[in-house]
Amino acid sequence: MKYSTKHILPKKLFLAAVIISLLLLGRWLITNSRIPIYELNLRWVFLISALFLGALGGLGTYFEYHGFGSQEGIYRRGERTPQVSITFDDGPDAKHTPKILDILKEKNVKAAFFVTGKNVEKHPEIARRIVAEGHEIGNHTYSHKELVRLTRKRIIKELDRTGEAIRNACGVSTDLFRPPRGMYRQATRSLLMKLGYKIILWSVSSVDWRRTSPNWILNRIRRYARFGSIILFHDGGALVRRNGGKRINTVKALPMVIDYLRSQDLEIVPVSKLVRLSSKDEEDFLLHPS
Image (tube, helix red, strand yellow):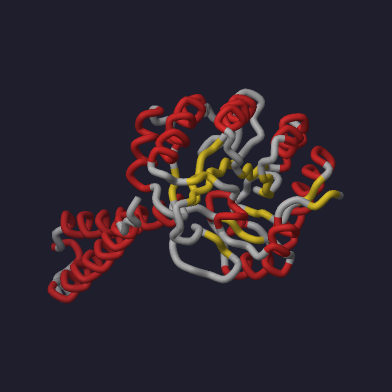
């Protein structure tokens, strides 16, 4: 499979739209600076404003569900080698996570599960199964609150409660972390690094939270997966309510996605292997017996 640059085009298009809309707005304001406001053509105001807000919203959505840029302590993809990783957020879920684990076991695939502390407390037996079957488990906060809205003290509490839930359920601890919705501030990144966490984001989102069809999910992976991709799925959660999301189409799509990736000679590996941690980091990074 050849490495593709298609994934960077949406970001460039959104940035171009923002710049163009700002230029249009500036030109329009200069041209009409001496016209009384009641005589202005409001259609232009609404059009330019809609273009700007639409582009800004699109750029924000792209960042939230795709991520971009390179920063210390953050992993968005692996190296350009014929390997990929499959990851799941927001579980464990009583209905869907066991089915996903069954598929992964049948296909002999190891994945990473970024769990919320609240769901681990609800379903400790499923969390134990994740670890027992050789998958990686990561901290996804306790209540799935966006970190950008939380104080430093609250962030630490969210991390600690989830870490405790994982230790109580699985007998291990983890330094894997994924922020809810992939959103964080620079101060948050510094805090997480200080606490010893490695921040795992993603380069390809299945966008399964839209309740799209299995074939739609498969086609999205076919379009965007490439060497080093970290692929995002959800085994629980909902876009607004954070829990109780219907993930049946994720379950149905997963075997097809695995078969497709392998048909492209892409090896599916644990995310720690994909991001090429050193041997010592790899030991410390994943699971420590507590």
